[in-house]
Structure formats: C-alpha cells, structure tokens
Image 1 (tube, rainbow, N blue to C red):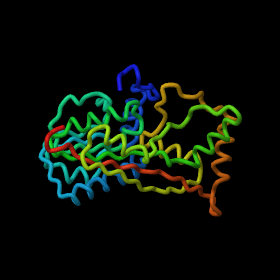
Image 2: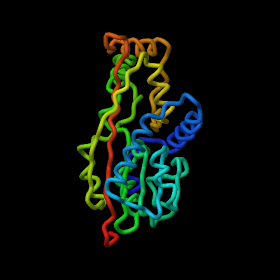
Image 3: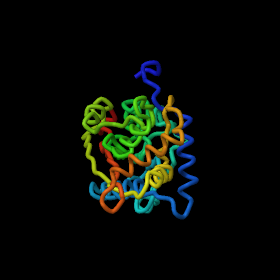
Image 4: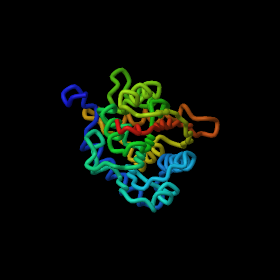
Length: 254
C-alpha cells in the first residue's frame, strides 16, 4: 500500500513509548511477562522442530530464554523494536531467521510489514512472528462498553482476525505459510490487576485517536462490570489469543 492509502490507526510515537515503558517495567522484580515468555518458548520449540540452524538472526521484541539461549551463538541482532519501524524496509537484510515477538498487533500496514520481513531474509530463510490476536480480552472489552454506556469510545485496539492472515501472507510472498493460534487464560481478582499486567507487557494504548480518559464514575462502572463476570471464587477469567505466523523466503529469493 502507498503511504496515502494506509489508514493511520496507530501512532508510531505511542507504539515506541509503550515499548520503552515496557522495558522499564520488565526490569522490575514482580513484572509479568507470561505472554512474551510463552511466545519465546514456543518460537524456540518451532526452530528446534524444523531443525533450523541460523547463522545470522534478528529477533524483534522481548526475547526470553530459552529463545535467547538457543540463538546466542548466532551473529545478528536482538532489538526491543523501539528503534525499528517494522512498516518500513529493514535497514539491513540477509538474515537466516527473523523472529518477531509481539509488535505486529499495532501496525498500520500489516501486509507491508510482512513484505519487509520476507525481504529481510536470505533465500530459504525462516520467519516466525507471534502477536496478540483478535479473540483476546473479551471481558475487558465488555467492561469498557459498560463504562462508556451509550457513547462507547475507542479504548481497545482493533486486533487481527487469524482467518484473514493466510491471504495476507500469500500477498506478501511468504513461501509455505502457516498460521495457527493458541490461547492463554489468566484469572484476575480485579480489573486493576489485569491493567497492570497489560502495562507490564507493553500492551497499553497506541491509537492515533484514542478516546478520552475514563472518569471516576466510568472507572467504577468498568470495575463493577469486570467483577460481575467473575467465577464463584471471585476471579474473572480473561483470554489472550496468540497468533503465530511461520514461513520462508523462496530459494529463488522472490
């Protein structure tokens, strides 16, 4: 897509800011990183399963063990993604492996980002990208609707439906593309605890035109609505859908 035709749903500066805040929170002893840990564990298993041994790798996003341990012997880069605009051509290429942990949930031009990932690979190189998908946070969404009443505001990102992704990968020229999903279910005693976990993961707002802050009364309605969805023990089960894309650049380099 051309720059003019791509809707500017997400703010690049806000995306960068949430990554930087995530890095600060991740350094705290009690910070929650279960989503990124799950993705890194899964990515490491996938690399081992296909017996891919990259000589030069790029990992964008949070990189935890065992993925970091598996790839420490390779040349290349680890980056939290704050200084990479994945919607633009990569400043360097020639990677045998590109792994993206998160990041693709908040891009304006997802087809363009997928093309840039492919172009960053050597012929036959492997790409694995995982991010939070469209079936995530149903309880939070319901709570926000209750908080806003008849005038709902834009508070939660539009998220990718995995059913639409295979066609995007084909358009982007990924060879042997595979899309799969799994879910993480986490039980919370309060809305505030969920929001804290989202901040730890850098999954806070990055919309270009976000809604106004919740007032005190609206926040209390949101808390009450979230609590009303709790199980008998008082905890509310929230869901995170993880979408994982895998594919290669063709041996011909196209």
